[in-house]
Length: 243
Image (cartoon, rainbow, N blue to C red; front, side, top):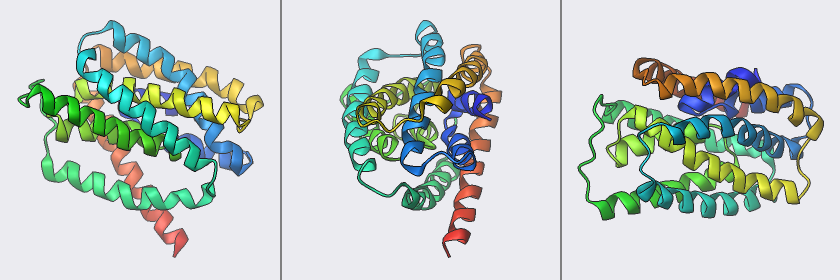
């Protein structure tokens, strides 16, 4: 399951939607779930990030602002996560996922050409704010962060999904590292499980990043839309459980 989550996460994000329930089913203490998940996703993400950096489609002069925003937001979110009951974090997905899904359908801007017509200042500001807001969510909870970043970049930065997927992975990785450091300092990681899961995550990320680097946009779109649908279905199920 962790290997498949790494595959999905490297392409469209949302791997945490698979891993978090897996850790719960394994009986991992609730206070260690988020830290363990962040450790595994960060380690597995190293492979996909390395391959994306070597490929084209990354504009670090713009992306650096999203990275800075992601670090700031993730640090704040992770501190909040250590003080709140993780069982109640499901309310976030219940609210956020349907909104993101609706925005994606309404805008329908998954273009095949990488064209950015916004001014440079607008791009820098939007990239920073996207990193800040979604980075905060990533540190606070995490599942679906990559998906939310891709949607935000497509909708608000007019970026094609193939490039958004690669750029989002970089921001997601830096916010992961920030949150991981905080969970590590506070000792909120189940290392026996994490060390085994890291290997599976690395394999999944390697396979998934191969699809994106090769420019297989059709596969990226299919996985992306499937993850969004999965997030929406799970949110509906969570609402049922909470009612």
